Length: 353
Image 1 (tube, rainbow, N blue to C red):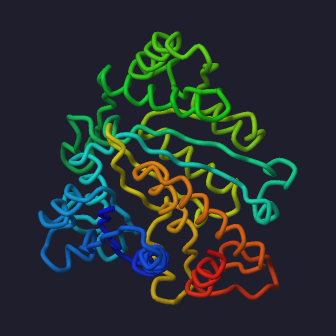
Image 2 (cartoon, rainbow, N blue to C red):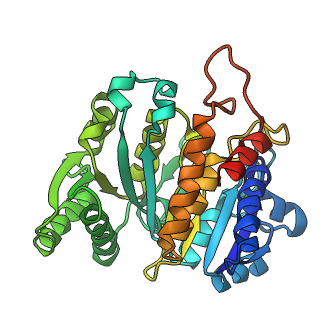
């Protein structure tokens, strides 16, 4: 198992270090794991002036899977757009064709009280959001800002090909087939022709999956329903921009964005695995970050790329046992309780493993 380690910026280094500790334990048990690290994001820009150096991209392409931390920081906000740290993750998705993003939103029983919603609303929540990653308004052309000050115009293009829509919808249907058999496709077909095409293609594909129930919902209604009654959903499939927003909303149903992992897969199952949170520069280096989303992302790596559901389940069980022991990092700690450090949480998962 050849794994590229890209810690990135901010808390990325701290949380990835805790995942690597688990990899070392598994390697010591005889699991054949090879790892190699490289710079990415702001750290890479500081070193060589590029957020995604050629050597880092080559490592990612050569590896079977990429374990990614986080990128970004306020010191990079004034850089030209193509030099900013976020360009690295967009570049990896595009260059490696990691088009299918899987973002589970699961409420651990031990954390039902950590959500800002009532426990009876979120208890038992288990949603999978399937987000397309390489199309939509994030990559569409033309884009830019034109005109003189006082009359400037900003413009972006929402663009999807039929092939892009079809392949992500197939991922959504297959994911639903392996879970509860219910797929909700999210669009804005009442005002956007791009998403009318999305809905049309979903209807065309549906007969290929008679065991999956397909429904449609407008994105604004979906955002409301995620707060009103999130357990009505099983698998949600949607485009790049809508998926970006909805998955972050869903993360807070679980109590903290620090708990949510993700997988970004190509057509062959190779993947980039990362927590959905950012680099959190305000707490970087302080030992306050929650490493569980990174560790759970690694569990997804074993399940989806390496076909080792046994290792994935073992890691996920260890996370639950660590939570059951009462340890909480600051983002999930109840008021008046003392939070544990990043390393302490990592050690608790190791002991449970």
